[in-house]
Image 1 (cartoon, rainbow, N blue to C red):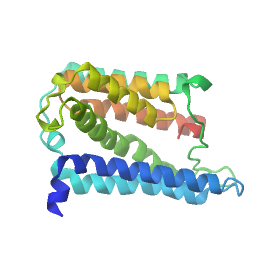
Image 2 (cartoon, rainbow, N blue to C red):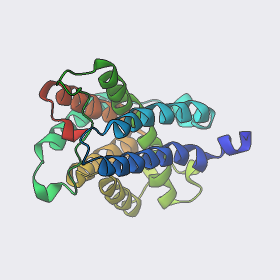
Image 3 (cartoon, one colour):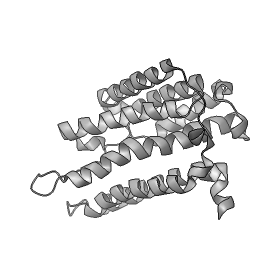
Image 4 (cartoon, helix red, strand yellow):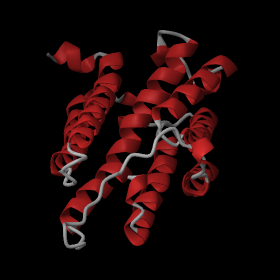
Length: 228
């Protein structure tokens, strides 16, 4: 079991695969319950997704050497992460046209039948979006996929060594993962560049946190649940 946990590919893939599995399950349940209007099961699957992925990240934590022992990053890198993360948020809500969106799911609505927001559910969902997803996705897409495409022995690949092919393929795949594919592509470019420039995985994670936290707060303020 320890060998399984310490495998660098497995450690970066399993949390992401768990996330996708819950995403598919919630989508299927939501579709089957569409006529009933409640979607309560799908709602709980969305909340469980964040908890399960967080637990997986904790369990695999010893395998994440670049997070436990990060290299140095210049102050400018952290500033660019904040600015880049917020810019991605603006793109995410700004490009809502049909051509830029592959699908329009109902999203996660924390309100009850009377229109009252369940703030417990909202907090769990926001924590999953803003804290769990950035770590999980950056470990998979930047730490693993981006470098693995460059060379299968990816742990020996410095971020600055990543070439154009790996950059473009990862960007396209990251865009395909998201319903808002255009914004996803922009996010992939920004997060890739931040990682490659800084060499520190915490830098794109910070940008991703800023993007998702800004999005989550905006959703709660505007009740644009479809963005969740």
